[in-house]
Amino acid sequence: MTPILITRAQISDASWNEHIGKSLQCVIYAQTFYLDIVCESWKALVWPSIAQPEIVMPIPVRRKLGLAIIYQPHFCQYLGLFSLKPLSSFQLESFLRLLSKEFSYISAYHFNPENSLRMSAMTTAFPELEFSQKHTDWLPIANQSQLYAGYSSDRKRNLRLGKDFHWEVQDSSDIEPLIRLFKENQTARIPGGVRGDTFIRLKVLFETLYKRRQAEICYASMDGQIHAGILVTKFAGRAMYLFNAADQKGRTGNARTVMLDHYFTSGNGETLIFDFESPEVEAIWSFYRSFGSQRVPFYAVNRNELCFPMKQIQNWRKRFFKTRQGLF
Image (tube, rainbow, N blue to C red; front, side, top):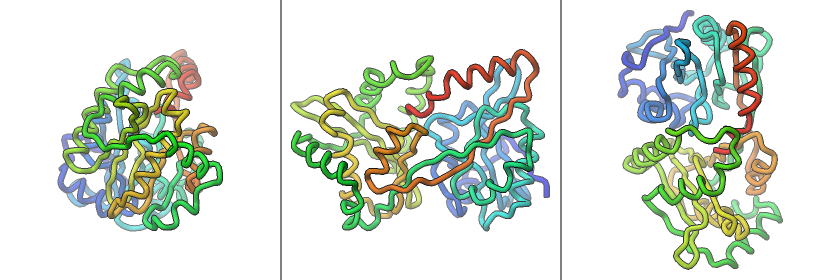
């Protein structure tokens, strides 16, 4: 079994998206329009053929100093293999082997949680790849009557305190206040700042998702002033907590707790799982767990086979910016 490496130009949007929609690992990050927005460019591994694939693997790629580098884009928590049938170890191994053969530098590549069972057996089979286990948090929200019972005692208390602030919670079609909140309150905490095109991509992404009725923005206001906001995208029974921000008053007043509870209990049709997109930051994921969510593992791979001194430079950059992604 040998997967085929193809370019974006060789991919039919209709057939690719149909495959993703039918796949066992279906997630909105792998839709072509989504990848086109969040990636500088992307390729894919497919098997057994381009015309009728049974397994596909999108690969975000950027070029630096003439070298093709695999990276994990912002607003795209994980990708991995998307298959119509349960994956075998041999199939996953074949994709990893070709990935390793074609790319000498993998800044980061995250495999979806549904790939985890097979990925755990691969960690010793590819010594040239560095495997690490990450986590996200999933909260079933289909049964709304049981949601509040799953909140921790602290979360119930903070929800009551938040409601005492009498936040005005409203949906919106304007992402600019949310971006402004983040810039004014979170950007300074990010080592090295934020790439210039990050918020441009986020704005385009939201506007595209909103037109497709796959995204919602919610703001918490007081006296006409917005103090916190959340952005959630929905697809195929799963909701992703894509972006959020709050100023000091919003944090003190538990505005995000109020907005999340509002989202969970307002009735979201087909949504079954809420994915918090948890970073590896204890204070953040403990907040998400207080809603009753469960930790879900997924694997990431890295590779650095660059020549000296580029290898050392990239390793230094990786250590320096390791907290950056967790703040988005």
